[in-house]
Image (cartoon, rainbow, N blue to C red; front, side, top):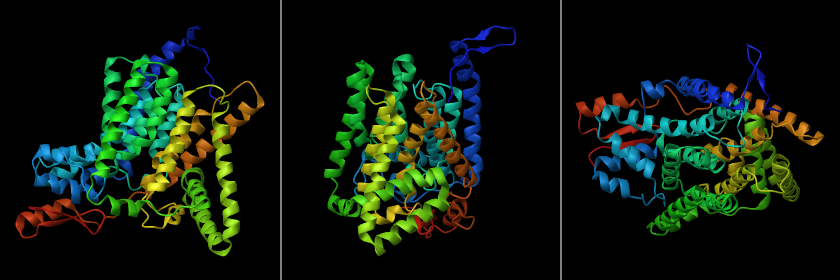
Length: 448
């Protein structure tokens, strides 16, 4: 759909591909990056003007950092979670160094920086999937507006999902075309992602596939990094004192049709058709499950087969190794791991509802949309032309539905606890040591 052409300039010559790349890198990319920062800000300015802690960000990590040495905080995997999170520990340590009034601003800025890394990789990276400017613009808009960001927006509690996306994007990058700075930035990002997101474990096979086929030292280093961090996460889980309770919350019964309906509701219908249609799909699916379990099974099997066909169409042809296959593999690995391990308290079917724990489905939704954007590429035959046109329409649909719901689908309410007021109350009365944070019902205990 987006073809590379030599563009005539104003004096009758042609703009070379090298000139076009420089124009994108030094003019359009910075402009788009600034626009993305502005878009993040306007979604809810109160996150910056009256910053807040979000859930475990304050209750667990910040409270722990206030009462323990920094080196102990950095190295601690919290037992209630069953994994190690370097990002949360680091953000909490830094936030504990400033006055209480400014602590949530520090964690918000940490989350903002992590949230901008995927956008930076798309705008300045060198992926074969997103070489031209239109695709870079589409992917940037998708990462901002995809309808699964409500819980993960500007809080370090859920920044691990953006780090997981960073790793998936690095998977599709051509590192050999960058300098030493880029090489080390990507290495450090993979280390941070691996030590902050346990889901990184399932991306390890994709990194090994890339290292095997591309035969480059840097890709072997990436695979080694993911392997090392995965081993650390596995050890953290098995040494967690309550790992059996953690497993019980996450690993509940799951059947094939429920699995298929979750995939469609959360990563296909929601991002491509919006929240209302996704809710309708979920309601009809669960009604069918109760009224006619056999038909629900048949429908689930058909939906799963249709999803497989959809992925095959997006990545076709599959004769040879290509980066798009890595993204497809990452999507399959992440969505399977997500559904199997999501916290549902023995009720996996609730994941069919599009508003249930949306944090789990941000990355697989974006990865599927990346496949759709990458397929907006005209080929030599009717199939490639038709696929490009349909994928372009789907891309525009996803962006439009995301923009429409952008400001409404974020966890915010003006009457939720104000951190500045909570700190002022604590300053006036030290006996008031349980400061309220977001969402309502969560708190930070000072002095423990």
